[in-house]
Image 1: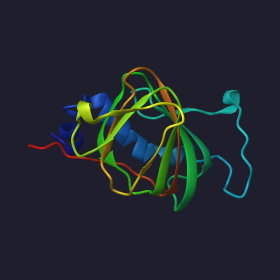
Image 2: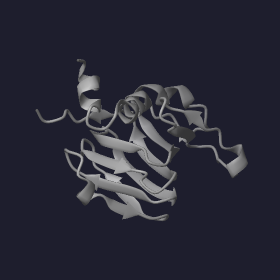
Image 3: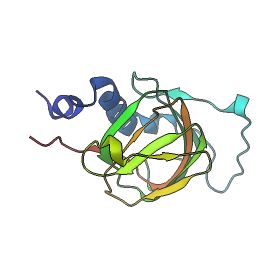
Image 4: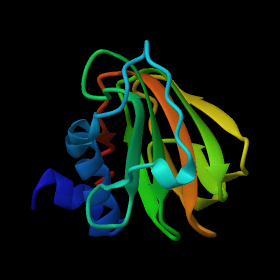
Length: 160
C-alpha cells in the first residue's frame, strides 16, 4: 500500500485525496492580481476551482501560492469533510473563518475531543511544520488564508 493510501485509511480516502490534491494543484489557479495591484471581488465574481474529488474548492485572491512570496486565497470546505493531520511549510500562515463553523486542533493524530469550534471571525495562525487537523462538522465552511509561499501539505503518517 502506498504512503498516501496508508495515511488515508483512518480518515477515508476522499479527505486524504483532497488534501494531497490541494498541495499539488493549487498552483494551477494563480491568476489573481499581484501584491501591488488592488483586488476587489464581490461574491459573484469569485472564481472557485475544485481541488480533488471531495468537494473542496479554492479561489486565489492575490499572489501565487506555488512561488515564494505572499498570497491570499479563499478555501471552501464542504459539510462533513474531515481533514486529517497534516502540516504546511508556509511562513506567517493565518486563517480567518468567513462563514460556517470550522472545528480545528493542533496535533499529530485525529482527536475529536481536541477539536475546537471556530465561529465566523475566528483567527488562528499555523507555524511552519505544525501538525493540525480540521472538520467542517456542522456544514460548509469558508475561510480566508494568507501566507508566504510556496505552500504545500505534508500528511502525518499514521502510527503503526
